[in-house]
Length: 242
Ligand SMILES: Cc1cc2nc3c(=O)[nH]c(=O)nc-3n(C[C@H](O)[C@H](O)[C@H](O)COP(=O)(O)O)c2cc1C
Image (cartoon, rainbow, N blue to C red; front, top):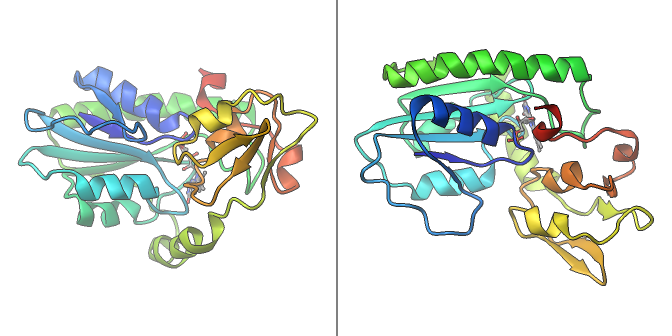
């Protein structure tokens, strides 16, 4: 079984493609359902995005609770560029036989603008080749550590990641432009942290946020902003490019 967490669809897409190739099933850990029984599984995979060279909080909590069995285990992170030592840290929580990173389009539009369309499409095409290779290695049970850690990985996955989790995940800058928002409620429905509530038709963000950026990237009206900078920036979700 492949367990995934995904904000804007990259990790979901990777998890589903890998599952198809290795003849396995996927499970979205953001679902508020009971975790399926895994005793009869032939392998366990974890797929998720990289946030500030670390693992998203819901995946950390999930991995801590996941039963450790004597079967093949792998993790695949998707990232815009590099992953630091996030997967080495994850393997301390949940032992991994194989670890991979796949470069995918960046959804971090609160930090920088969307990448060029051609660059996004190229990343997706290259990812398809990576997925093919990874799937074959999983089938062959090859133990691999194939992660693009980038420069200064220890510093990024420790100091910067701690800073991100402590200070950067604030929801204060989120707001919905009242002229554009039509109170459709999609943001409330899709937020994996259940942090958004419509009050008199206006989305209000509570404190808990994974910063997956699903709300801002999927808003059909482009009404959601994070501070002033995002007003001029594009929005990303993988469905737009498939
Ligand atoms: C809060 C946040 C932090 C991110 N940090 C990193 C990072 O440290 N390194 C990187 O290469 N990409 C980073 N990204 C980009 C995502 O990891 C990448 O776009 C990922 O494929 C998104 O997956 P998803 O569509 O499944 O949510 C970040 C994205 C977000 C939202």
